[in-house]
Image 1 (cartoon, rainbow, N blue to C red):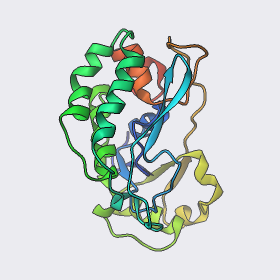
Image 2: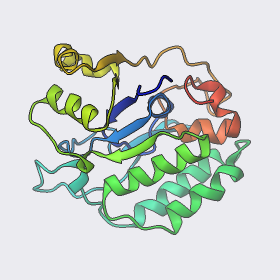
Image 3: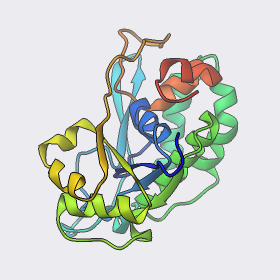
Image 4: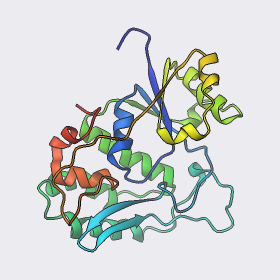
Length: 234
């Protein structure tokens, strides 16, 4: 990467996200967790999918939403502590026969059973950073509230890039629906659309192959070979 070139991605935190999320992190110099956005229910913020003999299953972190219609993701509190042992038991039941279960468990199990989290953003960041560490992803991870926030969807993203000394913004394809490409051009920031296609399959348990599950599925099955089934992790 040339001198002075700096790639930035900005995305809301997800709970144990899928492999594409980590590929996006691996493709940039700085990854900004955009948890100043409004919390959305029935989304990826607090849940993700695992594979089981009965098909796909949601692991959902219970959060306090009653009467909190406009709360930000960073303000969203986790409801109780029982979910953690329950999620860990689900992972044990469905992945204990995978080749790398013990290896991954050494650092993942204590997060579930020994650490305590009050807020969803806190939990998500902890898990994202632990997974990045295992995969050797070295992107700097920041929170959006480390920076000033402008009004305007695209203006805010472009300005965050500038504040982070970014020269290129890497965006997920879903943002094509609302991003004004001219704003990035006017600010002198290159806009690149990230592609989540073309992933090879790996050996999975339980039936037909599924790409859209938590990255934990890949880690349990492939361990340190996981980058072979990703595009930007070496």
